[in-house]
Length: 100
Image (cartoon, rainbow, N blue to C red; front, side, top):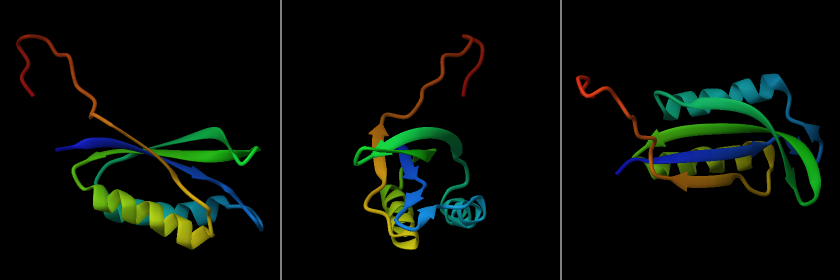
């Protein structure tokens, strides 16, 4: 069954902030794992420190791919964790005449 996964990638590291170029390189990992996804810029906090965050949302039946992407980020940027929110997939309300 498909689920919607929201992955919260904090951009602070012990050496500073993850650059846009480094994020773009990591986004290639996401693109290789999922045919479609959404990325949003947001603000978050971890252990009391504010930080810029990338929120990636994907709907998939492959939870193992989601876990792999989260683990890749943790390993690539020496992060403590990636926030992960799992929910039922989005539904559509359509005109009666339209069938999806």
